[in-house]
Length: 169
Image (cartoon, rainbow, N blue to C red; front, top):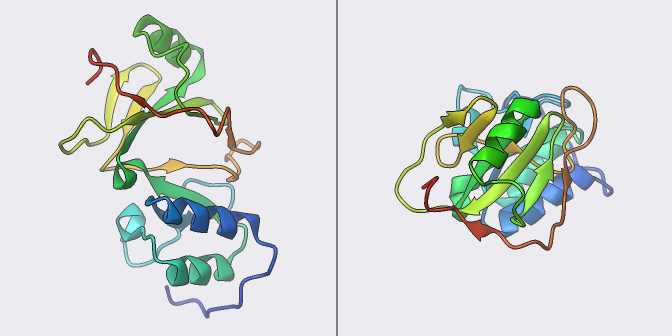
């Protein structure tokens, strides 16, 4: 990035969360506040994501309000993004809801976390309102702010991350 490096504030919940995700093995990167648009310059986008704490502190030192983008596949997970009523209905039809896997409430629905089944998984659609994110995509994570307002929030942060159902894999 070409912006000057600023010293991060001591109380920076987004930076602290980004550091915690990185410590768990997830690669993270900043997005402009209240957006899903990557803030990394040079056209890297989510491909510039890292677990490097120094880089994360530098990024959130530039803008403490940056949302957190996370690449699920980097830590062995796949996320199914459930958007709107159609997405919820399709997720129920496919047996994805109700499930007790770890989930995040988003501005439009849910992100359901599953164990990555292996191989390389790109962005794909399971149906209307159901998108897959793993190795070739990213999701916003708590405590980021959705573009429509509202904070991304864990449904139950202690819930297990279940294996991806066989009929979906």
